[in-house]
Length: 181
Image (cartoon, rainbow, N blue to C red):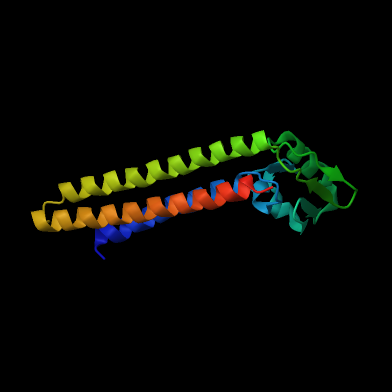
């Protein structure tokens, strides 16, 4: 694998990793602890991620359980979840916070599939942008012969095709998960 192919593969893999992280935040009927990753809690004046303040467990498929290590942060965590755009009402019992995940309606599932399609398209565009950047670098490299340049571009195209297929496979799996009743 050439220098260009190796670096290109690394950047395209980061696009895939970003897509996986975005898909993890898409709310389905299942409880997913990663949905709380982006929520910041005001903890003694400092914005702090929930995962640094509490243990997040999945006791059943449609419930998250947030257990703060510092019980004084319970109200702050509850407020942060309510203020977020999750659309979940937390239930505070004084020790833990329960987050029930209701099953989405058919219409909501269709919206989520559209959202997933948009995220996948963003990832495809990112992969294609990486291809464009590396093809430009290859064209500007005066040390490469025409044959080497052609070979490098073919290698970059194979990487692009591979990563686009991976994006499509991830989208298919996430769509099936979202549409599952």
